[in-house]
Image 1 (cartoon, protein in one colour):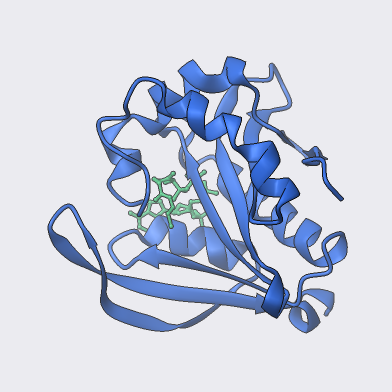
Image 2: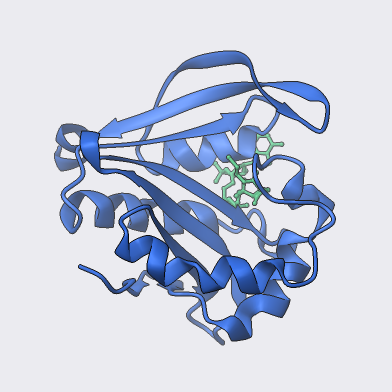
Length: 181
Ligand SMILES: CC(C)(COP(=O)(O)OP(=O)(O)OC[C@H]1O[C@@H](n2cnc3c(N)ncnc32)[C@H](O)[C@@H]1OP(=O)(O)O)[C@@H](O)C(=O)NCCC(=O)NCCS
């Protein structure tokens, strides 16, 4: 399995990014509100960073490091966000991550994408465990994890430093056996 997949859900198409998405990525991920609760989105979002990020996706997937997909609307094809599984093959596990552009928040899109990726991870990639972390002050992301069937596994106090502030992380996970139930 070397090519990034395309996954279709009720309202979304999760597909590989192309360089023509770069301007939309810079505009959507470039919003302060998106960078604020993610551990790795730069702010301000530098020119050329989206092209460099997208340009690495195919190779990083081929090396089984990470599967990054664009979250797009089935109706019209607009780019709404990004979702990923960072692979840890040694343990047959992967870390789920995502961001959505602010105009697309609170319509259930991220939960729909997360459910699809969890299903894909267990059924197509044969993963054993999928896990994710969110900042404690970002409960919307916790809801996405719950709606993807994940269980809260605890908190890591002041585990990361973001913009000179220590952030508590909340950990979620789901096992293959739970998904199959
Ligand atoms: C977190 C994020 C991905 C959610 O995307 P989304 O498409 O709006 O998510 P959904 O619509 O599927 O679900 C959001 C849920 O959070 C709830 N929610 C929204 N704001 C909330 C708040 N302040 N407190 C509690 N719940 C909240 C919504 O009501 C919804 O739950 P519901 O369906 O039970 O009503 C989006 O806000 C985002 O991209 N934020 C910035 C980047 C980020 O934080 N990424 C995740 C890093 S772990």
